[in-house]
Length: 147
Image (cartoon, rainbow, N blue to C red; front, top):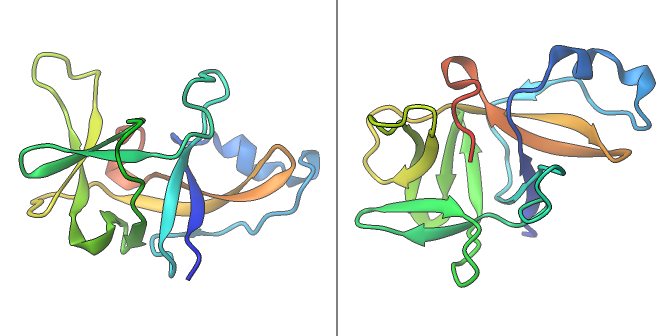
């Protein structure tokens, strides 16, 4: 099975989804919390060329995996099932870390035993004239799961 590339985005303004006539591509207007295939994650941030369209890699810590742009770290496939974002081979489920001393610097971490996983959803968005599947934080986690 060929892994797909998925873009990880922050919360999108609703106006971006409500104006398909102004876009140069046609996209399905549905949101799902489960994707049937494994995928790798590409970061989408044109204002930061150093990370824009870079594949997310994972660095192992003591019992967890941190996502980022690490040159020598592996690119692992990811799954989205019932809103849970998980690394392949059951390496861990995503949750949001909020540092006590700097709550504005939230990040994602993957661990095997997560009490409260972060929730994500997949949808289509028109990016550079092409329909792309994107992953974004969902529900109570909206706006919190930024990398």
